[in-house]
Image (cartoon, rainbow, N blue to C red; front, side, top):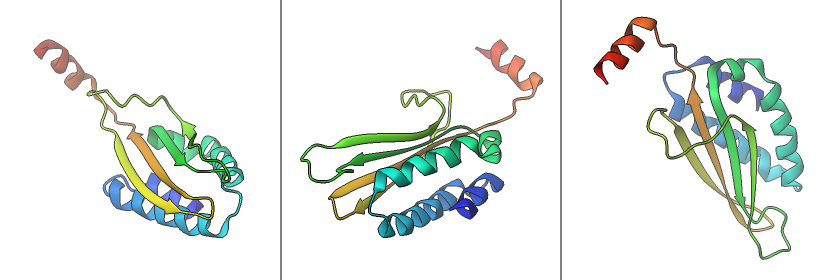
Length: 132
């Protein structure tokens, strides 16, 4: 798990491929877990305390939606990570990935949302303001 997070932080070019690798590692780990919510609580602590991830991404959020706890007919939504998720924005480039997952309790989906930090030099920033 930590190797997949490190690869995601270290290489900025192939974000989609590395996110799919992260989801694959997450999928393999979840196959062995019976208590899904406990695993995501631990993963939330890892993501919030990982300094390299904080340095590379403004937003890193994993959303789990579906029958998480089992036994109930209701769907639940569980979100971990950091950053404010605004899907309707045009100013940020949001990378999204989705993977469906079949578990003992039922089916749920895992979504990963990311926004990489970019450096804007002052000359382009003033040029963008002048053109607007």
